Image 1: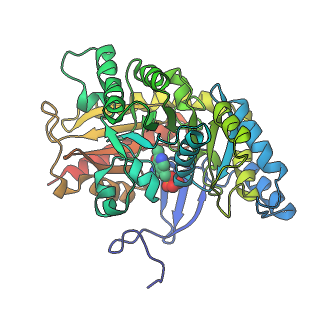
Image 2: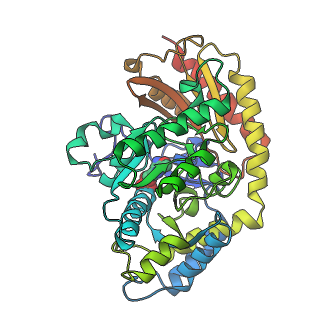
Length: 441
Ligand code: PMP
């Protein structure tokens, strides 16, 4: 009996006691391969000596300083490091404690940008139906996951949703990628026109959709079109790379592969690799200048923003990724993982799609490959896969997301960037067994 409120009250999680590299150990001595990095967090694996040393050193020096009184070298160095490699135009970093906080800050920055620049009528936020941007009220309002939103709707601010770019579910038979990208992006333009061209503040999207749909990248020039539409109507583009950013897809920022830069970019999970809670909102010079030349103030803030321990973790994690050239391993192991998934599930009667980028890959389960009909949600296939995987010492991230009334089960893989080919084989082997066991009636 514990006084800790678990998310799932009737099925409390197992008890973790330690973790090293790719492996967790629980209180009964069982081992688990962390093939999801928790929720795409642990990019270096666990107990990395460089990160631990950096944290010890920071703790000895300075554990906490409120940003109302002090800045710190470590927070400034992290910001400089992030901007040095950031998409073009981004010039400043706002450090917070996680993904939802980063999204909240981005939404407020977008709004304040327009109040500072004499366009207070710009207030609408447009996002996509198949998306997750966090669980705090602003981020939840922006997100399009109906299951997460439903009971809180009366508390949520107004937000508008268009279709995601989700080839497996929404591209028409025979439609080219170029045509589909144009059709999906066209929804943004139509929504802006519907709401009133000078009333929209921002469009927010995940370059590779994570938790809600399972590693779904856009097709063709979708994001170039999105960027052009935002520019045409003076709408700010917020890219949420909380899950897909910081190297997960093989480039430091996922949007590099789409060939665009946002006005605001949110990151979290892989930024600190789980060694400390940390998130960040990167903003463009244009937005920074609006604040600097306007009120000289961003009207927001949290007690733990710019936390020195969190910044030390982020800095140490990013240094290791560079020093050990881990992005090259993400690219190589991403190809390996896709090949192994293809070999294990390419012909599987109940796997409709295998997708993703880098070490961010997913399979989608379907009742019928021909019609793409999902399994009955009552079957809770994703939950069964998770428990069968845990029984085989494998941590994966299965979800059954609600897609405008259609529910598809998928399994997301996001292993640490240090995986080897034999780890990848072990992961796909155990996943294959877990999926087949879960599919038994
Ligand atoms: N945005 C995205 C894209 C996410 O995947 C998540 C977390 N799954 C969040 C925001 C929220 O982050 P956090 O849980 O750290 O608040």
